[in-house]
Image (cartoon, rainbow, N blue to C red; front, side, top):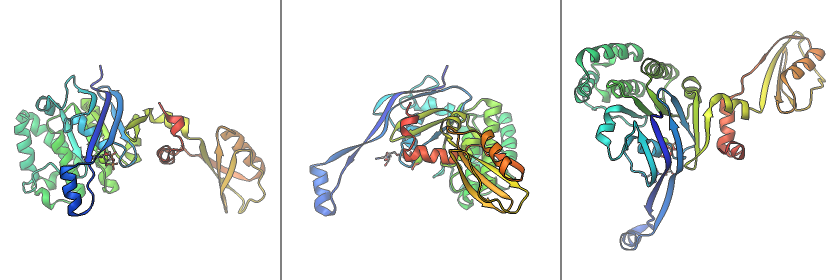
Length: 334
Ligand SMILES: Nc1ncnc2c1ncn2[C@@H]1O[C@H](COP(=O)(O)OP(=O)(O)OP(=O)(O)O)[C@@H](O)[C@H]1O
Ligand SMILES: [Mg+2]
């Protein structure tokens, strides 16, 4: 049974186009000129309990708008959303108990309260059983390194500290579904690592279902088995990361370490390109629809004094870039 079901979901924002100046303001008031902005366009997908799904796409693709409909903040213009069998918008109160949401760009904590006071309040509101609360507080403090932050008011925290605090506050009532909209935006690598570890831990231990929006493909590679890519409000890919790499990672690179200081006049197989020729190092990129790694390695070993070589994994970042740019749009269309 899916935990989240999205069926033919759409969101259209109606904008009143105002012309500049006072005249424009009056005109907009009495003779409005509406235009419709389709932010989410007939989306359908479902998510099973315990999945961590990466929800990605270029700026303005409709990710946050989808999250807002999933959480019940926005009402859909068409189609339906079901989370744990409920309609998140009309059943917001019941829904709130089972979900957690983090918007990376803003905080939901009380600005002037010390973190521990915020957490205490949230635990009261959600009626977290006291012994359980203590247990979770200990665990969260350890994984998110909160010890020194518990007495600090949120307004004094750095971005990375705030995000760790935010995650603790969002998960302290142990929601079944968590929506994370850019939780690692602007954070340093160490904090990102902590946060990813925390998400993994919660998912592993409680089968927490996670929908994760991010522009950091490191988040995706570390956390998600499945990604949904949206473009102009529509799903253009829904499936495993490994399939993206297999299907769209047309190019691979092999790095060769050579014994001799320089290598000149190499004859390479068709579909192969020499991208670096340095003393003792050769980097070759090949189109795997036209040749194979063993052909390329074989050819190089015949002609150069190869000491070692390694084949790089297809690079998710460059594939996603191509998908975003539209170069693979035809191919990925689902
Ligand atoms: N309240 C609103 N009123 C009008 N238009 C909106 C509103 N919210 C979003 N939009 C428009 O809907 C489209 C989708 O926006 P959304 O915020 O969902 O994108 P996103 O995929 O989250 O982008 P980003 O990666 O920049 O966060 C955009 O064109 C945006 O301008
Ligand atoms: Mg967004």
